[in-house]
Amino acid sequence: MNTNQPQHRYHHSNNHNNHQPRPHQQTGVQVTLGQRFPLTIKRLGINGEGIGYFKRKLVFVKGALPNEVIVAEVTGIKPSFLTAKIHRLKTPSPDRVNPRDDYAAEVGGFELEHLAYPAQLDFKRDVVLQSLEKFQPKGYRNFELKPTIGMDNPYEYRNKAQFQVRRDEDGHVIAGLYRERSHDLVDLKTCSVQMPATMRVIRGVVDLMEELDVSTYDEKHGTGLVRTVVVRVAKGTGEVQVVFVTAKAPFPQEAEMVDQLLTKFPEVVSIMQNINNDKTSLIWGEKTTLLAGKPQIREVLNGLQFNLSARAFLQLNPYQTVRLYDEALKALALSDNETVIDAYSGVGTIGLSIAHAAKEVRGMDVIADAVDDANENARINNIDNVHYETGTAETIIPKWLNEGFRPDALIVDPPRTGLDDGLINAILSAKPKKFVYISCNPSTLARDLVKLTNQYHVDYIQSVDMMPQTARCEAVVKFTRA
Image (cartoon, rainbow, N blue to C red; front, side, top):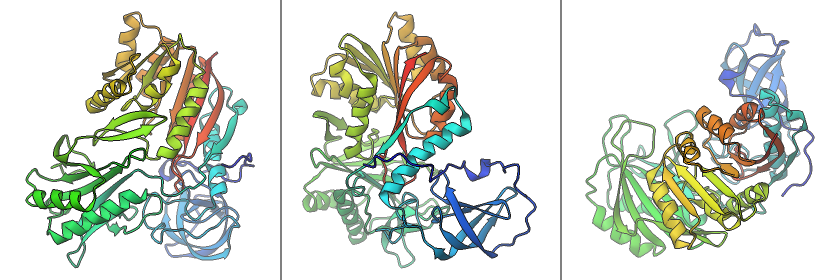
């Protein structure tokens, strides 16, 4: 954990396509693709790319770090910015380190693996700061931004591997992630951020698919069977679930695959098939069936047991999840006679973690399976003061208010898109005196704060590094009613 307050070493930039040139930028700079020039990197953008200026024109350079001097080679020309790659690194940053993964520069999810970990933590706090400066919610200059809570070992933390499966030019089965901005699959035989059990099992699945000659999906022609393999491990129990996402229902080698998987990997206790026959970039289809074992695996967090269905959301980093929820509970500062709404409740991990400190917890989620899991998880843990319903928060909260329920506290943990306008209005109508927002996207957080700060005061923002080696950042925001 880094406890030093950063001195704005790393700065935020918005998505390239939305970036407006600064007033002093010259948009008429004449450059050509492949042109090379010296460039000093001034800061990092929100996606972890280096940012410099060539003749006052903004240049984004993937893999470059602040204060580095490089020879840049132009790879893209837009009216308000250029993209470039490092042709030669003349003066490296003292924070530059060698990535553990040799493909880190090729696929997404490793944007900062070449940046020393203390500097990653500084960057993530600064992304929050720069997002606030862009949207300027009321009082933002006085917000307390606490140093990012990091990991002692920022590797081997991801509890789920979700790898695309294809055959290479030689006909061999490969599994991994797409090369950035392409559908060229990179075969990941190792991965430093995955929990070892996920990689051990997924590489075993690949070997069995090769051995049994299992058909893989052909994206171009829409033919073949297995599109994606998802492996999730429960850190608390060691149980592993394997999901085959297929383009159609029949799985000719199902019996042999199941038998050999269970024999070779006794930790695999659940084998599922999800059917997605749409031509889409979305991973999951609507239908999931059990092939072998049980339909859920069991995780343990903060002493609580959670059953997880194949599609149930759970934070990818079980080590930091406990810290994140501890920070949320600390921010809520509940008394035992207070009622709480847990919006975007998932399988109930947050609500059940705070239930011991509250009189009653009510939650909701749009995924029915997750709500079923949440209510089942309450029963498993003998917690009788929680209740979950299926639906949107912006619909259910007003319903509860009309029924006379008055929450003392509210906790939200939305997706990267942030809070729906309807939910913000519902929050402002409910007016809970205590309010905590867990954000996984500083930009949408800062946007939402513009409306929320009309009625709420931000006590502090605590950033938490849930995904080391990436540019992603989570934050816990403590509010009190203004």
